[in-house]
Amino acid sequence: MTSPLSASVRHPEILIYTDHQ
View (tube, one colour):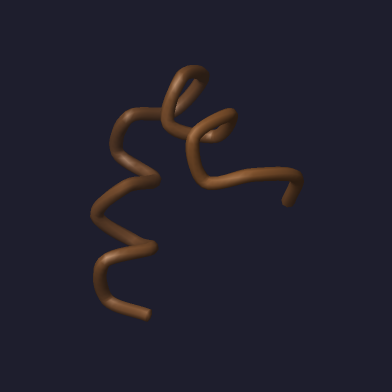
């Protein structure tokens, strides 16, 4: 994983995962 922002751009749902962590 590079950056949470970069991941959110490709997978906005990833933001929910980062929120859990």
